[in-house]
Image (cartoon, rainbow, N blue to C red; front, top):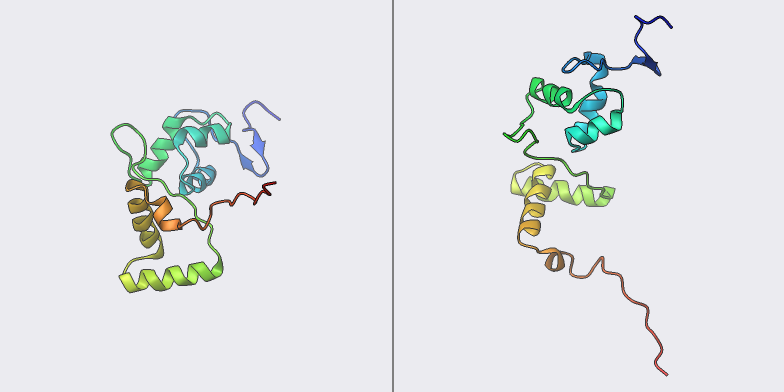
Length: 136
């Protein structure tokens, strides 16, 4: 490989380590990990290719994503695994309220988290029961 040729990984050339410069074809991993709710620092650590946090944040700005004064995103997504049956119920109930399923879950989670309602919401459904012991 000649010095002027970019190092490749698979079929994609590695992003340039030059601050703020990433080819559009190379930005998809940043977009994917951003959608997973990862921070710019976490994305840079995962890429491990010379891209820096400022480059990731520059892409967020270019894409019109919200970034607050401290440089971090205001909100992050948290993936939630649900069964098909649960997703059908979620879609039905969200429609009844007039919001998307994502917004429906966000509202419930926000209230449960802020008001510490875990025990009230789960009602012991996920608590591990200690095995009964024999008393002799």
